[in-house]
Length: 434
Image (cartoon, rainbow, N blue to C red; front, side):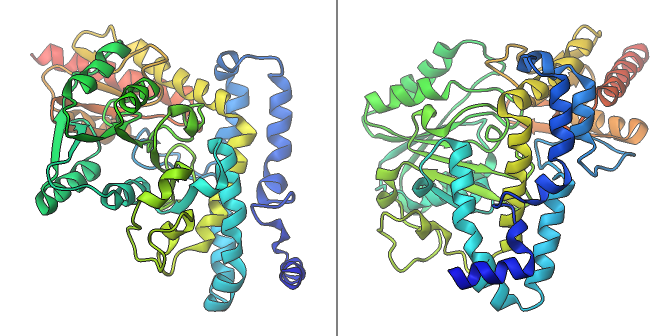
């Protein structure tokens, strides 16, 4: 190890994401620190409205100025420092892949595990690094020992890849997969918890819970659902794809047994990065999704035997965490919620416009659904892009039909003013023609 440190220093690699002299410190720390001084003493909510501070954050991104990207719920761009880290270590890897990847960069996963654990408020021995929420959650879904007749309860508003994973187990093994349905927005914790509770039968073994519904941004009362499930001896799996890096929370606070997330959404890590958290005493219960020589071990690393993988991406995750921590979780959540409310409040009274997401902070943050009477989601999505160059996504799923709007920390209020203008003009034109 001492020889490796000497070698890393010779290469200049001591400026990796996990050292004090990381790329973020070199490129952005001073600028953000100066910007923070101007809002010293501000509450997160007060800081959320300070455009001077957030302009500094926005400048750290390299987004296309000719497109207003408001589909960050799908995948978010990374700040330049994250892109630089991936590029730098990718170039190094290609100088001698098997040497630099396996003997040098592979050592970066342990400090990354520690940084992710610190962000998640968890034990590093509960954190596995992988490629996305689908992989993380499928590891648990396919890794749990269930037998024919055992029941799993989810919702019709869960993410499709998770629904299909449970259906596949149902088809192959005869488990029972039950889905309840909600009409969002809902601003009543008890109504949501009771819906899960009423669906439980003597054969129920697992509740699958989505923390933030990806279609319309509804936040579920995860802790209350998990507490109810635990009182009945039921396992809980939480899909945190749209909550981690957005909402200010620690995973153990949720009270769940398993948690999976993507890091390339609100954490702004490199595309194709994710994380799995398993409560320490539950690790032994899960079979790895990919083979491992000790599949029943208690070592979280058994879920990382993916074969050849991108070590530069892991360095990029580290820089994304550095960037996130410089902003601050509470401040970041407050800003993104402010941006959602900024545009949605302005259009909610426009005739023909409907908002499909709550304005109460405990029930929504960034993602918000909008529709215009007489237009399909596809038509509205197309109109926003073709005339105004605003990129969104049309949603038609179960009982949900709307366009999803998702700002991020780099989004400017002047961009949202353009969105408000666009929705108002489109709705007015539609009403006039009608």
